[in-house]
Length: 83
Image 1 (cartoon, one colour):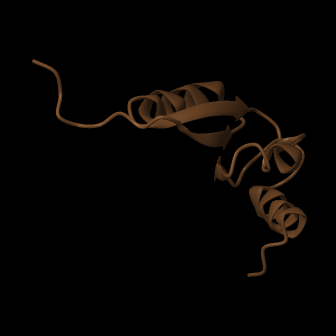
Image 2 (image 1 turned 120 degrees about the horizontal axis):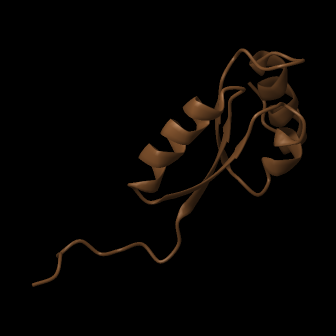
């Protein structure tokens, strides 16, 4: 007998940005057990541009070359989100 839970037709997309590959993998594993499709980046290069394709971002504060605060600020500005 099948599950009574309806499976979503589309999966929500999440971008995981963390400089440590093991942390990216762990977060993606947990997201994959739910209704999320995830992608990951190990640096801050590119996540702002990817924000449009990935409406939700899991972001660490300590990234190589730039801190997560700056990435979050730039992503909000590019998306037109006021805080």
